[in-house]
Amino acid sequence: MNPFFCSIVVMSGLIMLFGDNNLYAVVLMSATFVFFVMQDKESWKNLPFFGVANMITTIRLMLVLVLALGEILLSDAYLFILVLIIPLLDVMDGLVARYRKEESQFGMFYDMEVDALFVIVASIIIYLNHPSMWIVLIPAFLRYFFKFFLAILDRRNKFIESKQKYATIIAGNYFVALIVFYVINREVSKWYLSLSSVLIILSFVRSSVEFVKWKRADDISY
Image 1 (cartoon, rainbow, N blue to C red):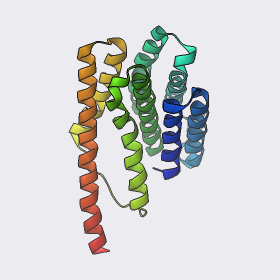
Image 2: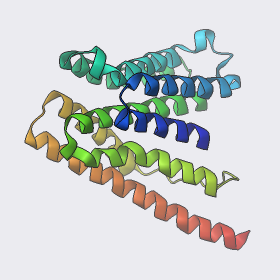
Image 3: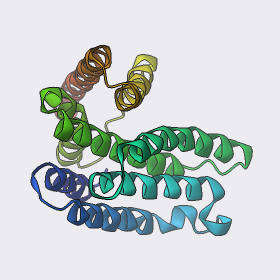
Image 4: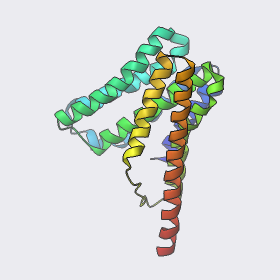
């Protein structure tokens, strides 16, 4: 992941946290994703209409941006609807990509970055409305810090993180925990989201340890 991309998304999140107008954050997010898409133009330019699956991902991106503006534009009811629709579209774009044989590395990364943006926006909104839930800010920003330092320390892009099934389950569980918190704002949902946040943190700690071990071995061999 491009360190510049990470930095701008984090900056956008900080503007949401400490700024007075989320519009500035949304403009930054939009510009960053335009840069992301155009930077990889060679990967999707042969797909008709940008690819149907990628278009669904783009619609999801637009809804995430609306969610970021939600506090000043939408009522709580519409926020709940958005939080439910965005993950459903996430499932849909994957199914469409496989059905239409539009699967690509670009589509995979595009989908992942929109997912990550949804997590950071949804988590920040929860914290702003429930300051006691500060723990959600850690998984919200942790991925970007991890990827940023990964890109800086592994300039040759040689590190390949091992794919663990439990990591996918933990990430999916966090999505569910976010949705549950928005729909059912009760004490049990707070504990569920807090526990899910801790699991995300532990998952990144494991990935960091794995990278440090690889880095030491790579430095010795290099």
